[in-house]
Image 1 (cartoon, rainbow, N blue to C red):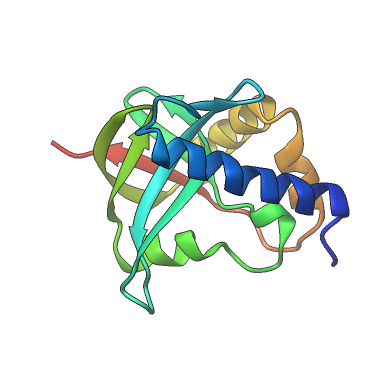
Image 2 (image 1 turned 30 degrees about the vertical axis):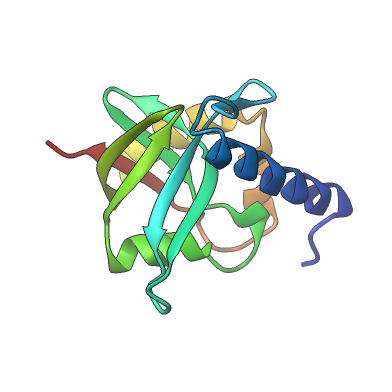
Length: 145
């Protein structure tokens, strides 16, 4: 299914947002349109190169949860595959870097985190899920140490 123009434009804006978030050391960009954002730093599973993704998150105790939606594409985002290859990564929340271990939520925890993230994203994840037959993963990022 083709991604709507409005989502493609929003994707470009997210790229600008990520650029500013990274370059400001997290002083600018910790939220966008009232949605909390973090930077997920991974290593490319195939390339071995450093990768960064700006993602909406919800807090669950000390954990952070992010949604591997890719706007409802039929394929998981690259960062999800990177986490499967190496789940020990770093997130940046505002100016703070946190070492985390990633895992995919299941069952009731997945459902609860999905509901909260969808609420924060104003129904966006439900819209994305309607575009694909894959179950969109909910990833939990648990601080280490």
